Length: 288
Image 1 (cartoon, helix red, strand yellow):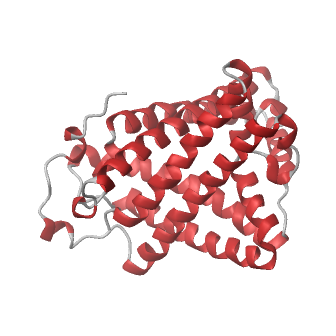
Image 2 (cartoon, one colour; image 1 turned 180 degrees about the vertical axis):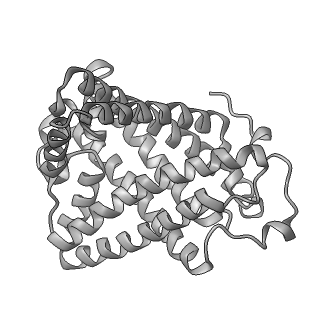
């Protein structure tokens, strides 16, 4: 992996000028930083579940909290937290929505502190991240209200989409978008362009290295998983097979069956754990 930090930060902007423009109101930003940590915790939950599956075998994947995906990670909190877990998930949902709002506003009018050539790419990335965060916020809210989620609801919706003439086309486009995100995330991970999102004064020495390493590993791990999800989704659209569509858990199991088996769960689990650390550093040092 070749990382070129010099190309990441680029020419520094005048600090007095950049401080005048924020990508969100200060109170939204403060709650959003908590949401970013919550987003990282979801990835840590996926890491725990993936490693559990590697250690105990595929049968450990049965049950709502046994799937190595965002729903399984949220279910893990709901199952272990009781009444407190419900409130925790509700608070996490609010914080995640605040972070999504922060990113949507940044996608529309933000990143004024970035160089013009980087601004459009960062805005697209912010929009994509907002959608991902909102999906997790929905899961957290669902579990907070119902005490349990409805895993089959997603598959039922997909089957209904396939009944429409344009449904398969829409699913196929979604698969292509996921594959496109693979290339974007791979570029982000290899070139470490995410380092340009941080306030340099907050990342010195070991903090800079920790953020660089975990951000690169985490983004590359997510890139590979998104690619497999996209390929499975596109294949399902082509073959008119709605039941073949799956999320992170299905992607991990597919990768394991075609590569190094259970060790793949450990590898991707470590990658998701690295992304959790990166999210914590992101919440701490992200540019206002």
